[in-house]
Image 1 (tube, one colour):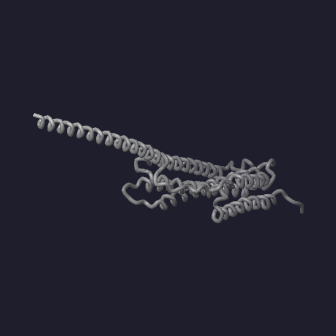
Image 2: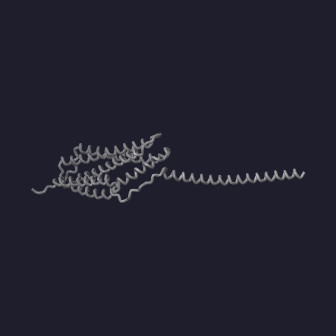
Image 3: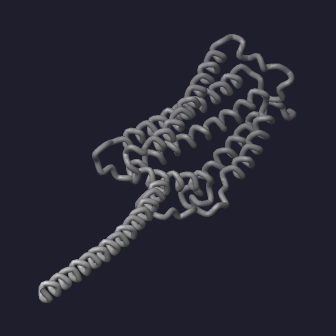
Length: 277
């Protein structure tokens, strides 16, 4: 009994998935133990510093923070819509009678109806995971907006930082689910394209996820950069006004002393005139 092409799905597909899962487990280990070596840890470090600075500005200057959070919420909502749209399309494709369109001699692998159903269900599952993750990301970004705009309260910065970082984590999970879905999408054309895509994607993700830049330790300034410049200009103007005031006071004292001298001379002249008469 010779080797059959249907056996490729039993060998290459689990191998490709094992490579993908193994890489992401290794990435999770790096994020937990050495976050500075990953792009996710680098971005979260900058997000934490950004939240800390945004929480120090006045309530009237929170428009920039709200616009940034709004853009992240819109992006998460868009990808959420794309994921659920593709899930609906795949679900309709599986339910139709023509979903076995790719079962032809051009595909080198198992083209049975049961295997094709497993392919579509696997892709559908990862799209649904991406949908759920992006929904949670949008939820945490909306919650961040509520926390930042809460007036007349001593809102801890840690709460806002936690909401932003959790939203970014769910965003990353949604992207990873889309990467898996793309890999399984190539499985429709056979196990060989799926395995090759898994290897190439892991190589690309290792390059993209690695970070070589050191984490910048942001200084804890009491004021923002723009507001600090305004206060610096105000202090310089106050110093100038103080110096001008001191000079005016000195001139005023000199004029007062001159007037007193003139009055004293006038009194002496009057006393001399009275004595002579």
